Image (tube, rainbow, N blue to C red; front, side, top):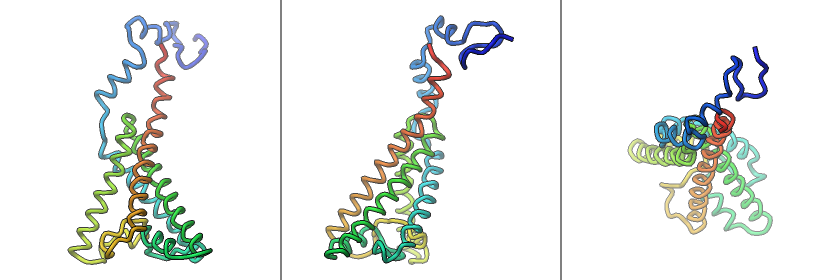
Length: 215
């Protein structure tokens, strides 16, 4: 058996496969484009599991955050908009603590959705940003379904509240200016993090492709 210089060398005396690929006029970009055309696109199933990962991480980190309670001016079943309102209404040290709590929630949202996008991108292999977008769309769909259930059957179906997840206040009266800012921040941070996570998850497969086919 011949020695193996690297991953591209055969063990039976044949030429390294990248040389054969070059003879056929095949390069990495062509192979990747062909694979993407056949297997690419938004994968709803992968995105669902990414969404579940995001929910789990958000629930865990939010529980840890609310465990600090008074230190960050948070309490159970407090929405991001309410925290922002509290920070805007407070003064001095209380205002600073409230802002820290709001920023901490945004960090949790970013970590959760980045992780969810990463899971979806890693599972789907292609079109990472689309997988991240799909994770975010799953969260919107889930929030709408919960809102409808709460509207029809009452607050016992408010899963987001029961899990104490950061959420948009859909049924909590008039939304203040600070609340609108909080909603916009949640949307921007969650979407951006999901897209970046999806791209990061896909990057692993691109590294594998570069190793597997070098022409």
